[in-house]
Length: 377
Ligand SMILES: Nc1ncnc2c1ncn2[C@@H]1O[C@H](COP(=O)(O)OP(=O)(O)OP(=O)(O)O)[C@@H](O)[C@H]1O
Ligand SMILES: [Mg+2]
Image (cartoon, rainbow, N blue to C red):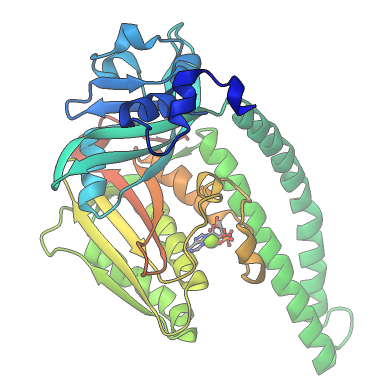
């Protein structure tokens, strides 16, 4: 009953008399996920009870301290947010681990944004959630599915082999219609095999079983090669692909094959989800430490509720029902980018514009030498 609410809170419920600082305190204290506010030197200004619960630190003991000295691993670096901000991003969604006060690692999903006023960076705000349980479930699900996928490969190979023999007339000649049917089934078997291979690749990458073979790579040349192979798909929807690369951009130090898979998957999505006659834009820029690549489209963008899951294997948003796919492309993108020591994130264009912007950063040569050379999530 309203009359039972203590006087000071009663005031807060009144729009005319609510004070901004009281409202701020009320929101921060009751915010259902961890919230941290940093000043421009990455020192902790605000740390709410949910953040205390997740990390084991009390606000009083870490207030004013350098965020990265206390919260080891928190993926909230102002320098990166600055880069994102200059690449016209406001929100960064990603995953990482924070070291709990007692030393154990906690997987977190977090969203961060720079705090900007008059075009000046004032600090950053981040919200984060402990995703330990989700990760355990995910891991369990992955082990089961990978065993299942592995076991499917055998029967599929046998089915494909017999279909090929039928196709070659080894069980007698086939008429035109029969050939057409066999070709369709062969194509579908091939598709399933491709999905199984991709999924098992992710599992192997995550287990650190694939080694990156990095080399210096000219981005302009790489994109022109890639575009040649994707032009056909884009052409079917009359989609134009524009690439913006500064002439003097530093070479990327990457595993060319894996890096190409990242671009191919992002472009494949951009084309799939964009309307006909639209433009897909690729922008490459660089900062001191990173090469940044953004792929912009004019499709439906990503619903807020899908954002945290979009990079999970087999996750597909509701609206993708009619579009062909099995939800594995972005999981491959994330695994490969992170294996290079980079980050990937997504945001929607600001209205009235429509579309998604998928961006990723890859450390340049000097930075990448600090990373292990193994594909491991
Ligand atoms: N550019 C985009 N615009 C809108 N939604 C997208 C875009 N890219 C991805 N998505 C959403 O994210 C989901 C996951 O993408 P992902 O690339 O992992 O899978 P997919 O494209 O559905 O299938 P696959 O890549 O395995 O063939 C998609 O199903 C779609 O819902
Ligand atoms: Mg895809």
